[in-house]
Image (spheres, rainbow, N blue to C red):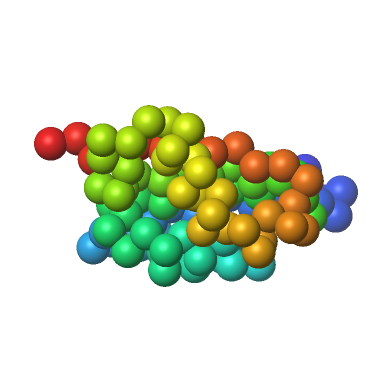
Length: 103
């Protein structure tokens, strides 16, 4: 029904090392994912979702990386903010969820 109303629902992008599963993604989701992949090459999982309805104003990011090991949550989030410093300038908001891989 959403398609009939002229709306296009877009799903999340989820990358896991060794396997890539792509669903329909916005240009902004792809750009943010690429930046995170470059800045966190040891990330075992990255998920970026445009939660603004597709306009690119707000994103939710889930990233799992060894880079976060032994760092407090605020330090992990600062690392993500620094990595996305240019992209953040055009955003209204950002939700960040970070974790380290389970052994």
